[in-house]
Length: 214
Figure 1 (cartoon, rainbow, N blue to C red):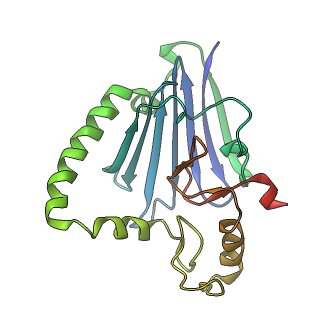
Figure 2 (cartoon, rainbow, N blue to C red; figure 1 turned 180 degrees about the vertical axis):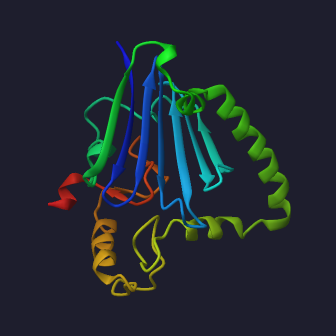
């Protein structure tokens, strides 16, 4: 069975790169790379383990997590409480490039690092050592700073979690914020970069069950 690589640019500006070859599947998601606080999310799975990495706009690793859990993979079987993440409120793409990978020679140089699970794990372990040293001096502040990065400017509800003090408090972009608030109050949601229902949400925003969009 051949592998594939796919690059999509969505209408909201989000860029997704997805590649599958052999046992490995990798996804890279980015948005607004021209912004100073832009982030790139990478995930790699070999079917029995899962690695996620968050990089800044300069491709420097700032956070990562390694899960040795066969349930926390990018693809899974049917029967879950939630729909597949790829079908949840996915905006239409403005550019979509798909290519089959029949042998290792077909894997482009810009895709190879995404499929190098061992290299990415080494980078993650190195970062964790650095973080443990830094947290001795900065413990208690790192969590808040990271959460703030995942809220879209002008909103209180769009992104990971919310910063609203009450249900009626909306940001400057009230129309989008109202929509995000309604999604956040869906009974079945997964926040950005969080794991729930044996699924990991690799997007920069909360995803909801399909019925909440009806």
